[in-house]
Image (cartoon, rainbow, N blue to C red; front, side, top):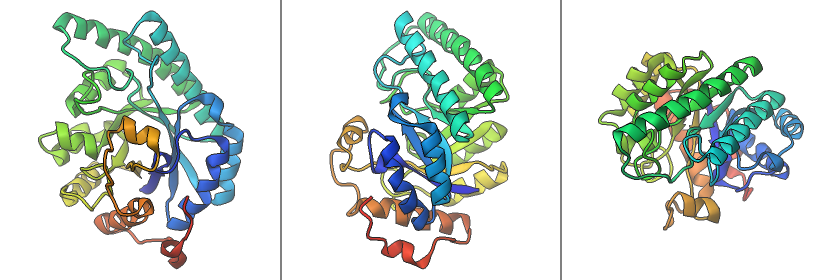
Length: 297
């Protein structure tokens, strides 16, 4: 199992020059980095691949950012825009040797409201149609699509692991799995450990985040049952810290971070990683100097 960090904690948008962060992430002890690609034009896959190799860190996943205009259940134009965007991410992931494209690849984030049963059925069928086609492209490129349920305040389409499993099974591709996040599950699931066990072999990506979107382990969540559940299903994917602060203004607004969550931004990464090693009882491999890193990232 590898531990990773989502770069949203430090920068938005991520651009090719943002790869300077890779060295810091490696020094802190992370195995992988997760890169949100807000616009494909922001990055050079070849340069990201080279920078990661030089830093000795893997690009474990790239994150689909489903902003305005990208909606597989929206207008015809929005569906086309979202489809082309996700297909481009698949191509970029393959080019940089990244195995996964992750995130809520079904709808623009923030679209929510009461929807009739008939409309729900129509939207579900529309999303399945598009994701089936994207899954075929992903299969050809050797990329896994990891679909993430979000909490009710961010989408009305996919909130729970049961809904996620229904979607993944309807798509029916070996290259499509489910992506769970402790922050969203804390709102939507009765029992996170039970949800993880229910997803089982379909779990292909995992986000570790504090219940306040701060440091995993510095929150109200009981992490031991979660770790036990991940081990029980023999989960082999990455566990990625995806947390946010007020430092990155665009993301703070999007994630509703209206106050200071932690004293220091770097602590979310460094202490969060220490907590994950403690929870999973894994040996910390980061250099002793990592905690003394003065990089402001």
